[in-house]
Length: 277
Image (cartoon, rainbow, N blue to C red; front, side, top):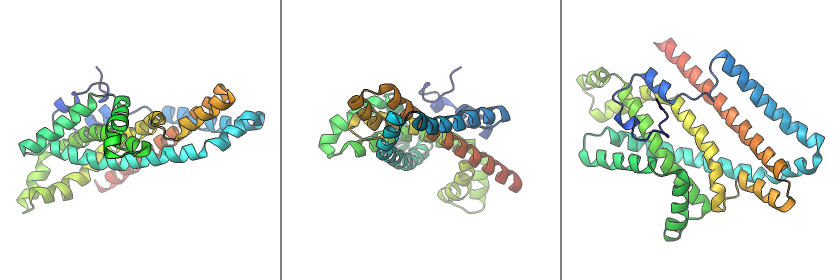
């Protein structure tokens, strides 16, 4: 049974209130090191990639050293697109997730339509559409189009994560808050959402890692990201193997680094929550 929300659109929307363990299970990625065997494999891959990236320029300064001096600005562009898109997607996803559970019919319908439509269109198509179709109308350059497309796409997936996380909190929490005199909005922001953060952090971390990798697609929009810089070097020197090897290693190191960071945040949050429990 396919439980990946990206490959099974509509499934998450049909899942009722989920227990926190279920939400983690549905969104858990093998990229995030947890058990001892996975962590050992992570260390081999991470430090092996770093060692290879250091050894190649020493072994063959030309062209590997030239490639490493050519791609730093592309790395900056990749981080810019990724961080900006994550921030926008979090806000959009939270709003859409709250809209998915709203009692107001029109708000619920708008949020549901947004989630279903966006998840039904491939990211590459959204990039083309926003850049070539809407870009001239809204005066968006390649960078802004890339951030907009990634934010809209991942906002839809984050909306389902927030929705499932909120619905995983026991209904008694809301009832108790209302009994204490809080309004529904106050209870949501002060009681429900703080608990939801602990539930949704791992799957949000997975989405961040996926967005980092998908940011390579923005190279088709004339954005000088890491992949585009590598492609430019390869097209002028014809060192395709070397250029794409360096690009792949850098992406691997970044992905593994952030996957470990997310894993540490999850462990700390779980330990911190366990102490208070």
